[in-house]
Image (cartoon, rainbow, N blue to C red):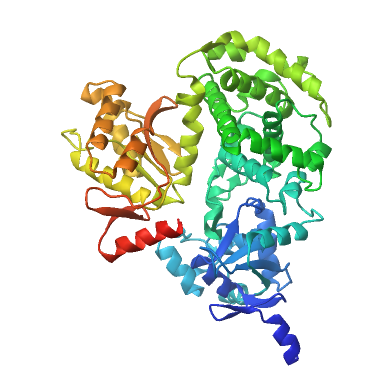
Length: 610
């Protein structure tokens, strides 16, 4: 290589390495080190979920073992912001996950697993509890393990100064849409209000909420699997409303058709009437040069993204709660709407959702006789106007009005309306509990205030620790939540079940146990139980602004029959205190901040760093 060619390849350095826009070779062993050190990031603005099948992963390992070439991995080196110096994956996330997952015993190849004795870094990760190793069974030979570790991945590192650059590069790479579904093609390379809103709403409804940028190692926790092909991912397709109710098939969910349905709902809400639905219509909404795209962007701004998000999530939450009160059977909604059918119910679901949206959001009514609601729509699918590729606005309006006419007598005026309280908050709470598993500093869960040892006394020390935790979360500049009635360990959940006869409800790795049992033991109703919490917060020495805000943000949420108390901590503009003491959060621990460290906190708030 000539000096001139070599110089063109050199852009800068990352921890002593070469940053380049020409391909470089980097060993799997070196990339795994960066992976363990949290240097490989995924930006959910444009990256899809982990979707590779087990067969696809095994074929990749086979290629590496045979020293066959595999596609290049493209990174962006971020030069500014809180992630400066780290590598954001533009292309190759599925491949990297497959390689690292194999090393960490996530799956086998021809009945054999990677031998951890051949790789000290992975062996140490297993010892630290990062992953659970398989102790018995057949393992690859030392030579095969060395071949994997020494395999040279072709990588390119693109120096990026802004997120806009990264998004543009991603969009151009995926311009031809190879291996991407229609909705994934639309999302690729587009970062506007509509695409962001659709992506965030879809994540909330699936339950795979997270920060926008996260470590590659955290992706399995928020990715989706189905029971016929388990990968150990955090979200099961069969548990999402889309697959559990037969609205979409697992393949359609994998191909992001749920996001297309969310786009449909967002457009219908923002524009004030059902859109004429077709693939071409959805395509134009993502075409930056299209007038339809501009019109939808303007409508979303006028309606407000936050309002659209709140209203759609609230309607999903109410619908989920209605279904749970009648049946927990798989495909209940599909069986009710189209008895005997195995086809997904995308069209009928849209009409049902918009009918309920009108009743609970626009008319502020609450469902009163839930069984009668679902009896009223039995076999409704046969009488709705359907179309395979194009649905007119008028036909969709008629479908919505037909369903609304059948169910509206079972909705009543009630104060407060269900949309703003109770079941309208369930989905938000469930997503926060899932999110808390990754973003531990901003969330705290407690099984309750009564000791789990005899005698069952109210723990006043916990009151003080809770006040300090509120302060600690606030000093991250927020927002965050504290949940009472959620066990933070399996041991506590089992103890509650043994003592109080409550069957915990699993949400990811958390267990909802409710506070109703504690109110019963204390001989008080839930209002008095909540007043006790409000009183000790009101009498605390929290900074006045923060105290006022959290007192106005305490909710009791009926979570599938168990009551959770949620204390919401909003973002703050300055450092908060408990009397003269200051606290912050390190992981799941609340730590006191003293001396010069308080000045560091103040400087973070001054610069707006979260």
